[in-house]
Image (cartoon, each protein chain N blue to C red):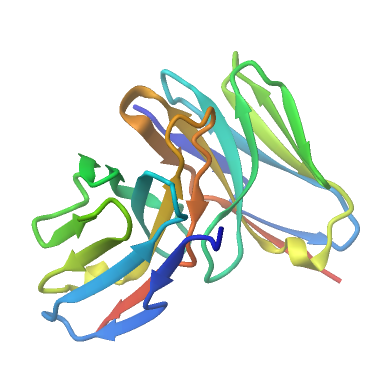
Length: 112
Length: 115
């Protein structure tokens, strides 16, 4: 069954600290993996997209890694800011049927 | 490029009423997607269009739901005889065909509350 699982479900960190969010997927055939940031009440915004041949991709303070062998990805946020408080959603894409499979997200709260 | 827009942003309706939402994708994006998202969950795929053709429909899309994209530009999602379980955020996204990564751009969503 194609699915995406994320952990932790929620996370609270102090401003300035780093954190890492995890994503495991069982989507096959796998094409690419995305991380989105979704602020409360808004649509998701893309942070990174990685194909199966890419191991890491950065977007400012966000760095995503991908291990296509173990089907795991992580999103590392450095020097967190209050504005990083949001839900972070991992999405796996397969060209077969043009399907996107969304995880349930990790809710991140950054406190001063 | 003005982004994906959705209208209305919020809709409150009584059970049994019909509602219609509109999505305007980024111009020249020929793929358009509809998703439903409930609190604390990731978006769930409903349907997608390539130009005016509806190519895929989820089993979540019951007979009460219908989506159209008549001219391959904007799209509408109609829910007939709404039920309380339809309360959710309805998201629209668009992407350009033949893009290597099929980058999706999401709209702000329409939040539906069925009372």
